[in-house]
Image 1 (tube, helix red, strand yellow):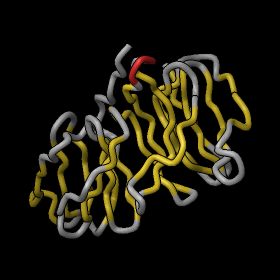
Image 2 (cartoon, rainbow, N blue to C red; image 1 turned 90 degrees about the horizontal axis):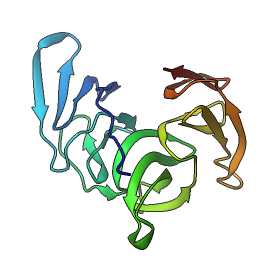
Image 3 (tube, rainbow, N blue to C red; image 1 turned 180 degrees about the horizontal axis):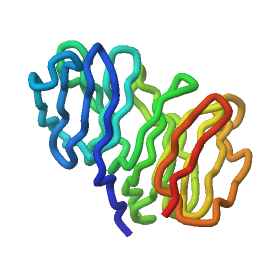
Length: 186
């Protein structure tokens, strides 16, 4: 069952600009003090909607890669193959990606992937329910939403699930704060 990519755009502040994803193809850079002046980019791998700012770069969710865009120059960097990206977050020294990746005989596997952005490789793949849709790093943990459950992942010791929290409805997105996450449901 192929993954449905995000169809909503995101907005992130990075490098003195606001960055917006206009799914499926475009990333827009806007100066907050001159909103009528903007630049648009059509990345090689598309822009499925999820964005995260990391150390002067904007990381964009593409059709098969997560890739950086320099937040000042707009130059696109080399992507990391992670499969079709649903959501991205950054924390605990890693890029965390919810994506689907074809795994040969097993078909398409949707999971949480811990990505080393310096080494440009997927370090860990963490099973996180049958249909994960969102990831957030907050409160010292990585959180992934899947179905009617939010799973709390230990990013330091095991990369394993510390607890599974039922939320009573289908989770659609996560927002983090210092204590943990807020869950949007439908």
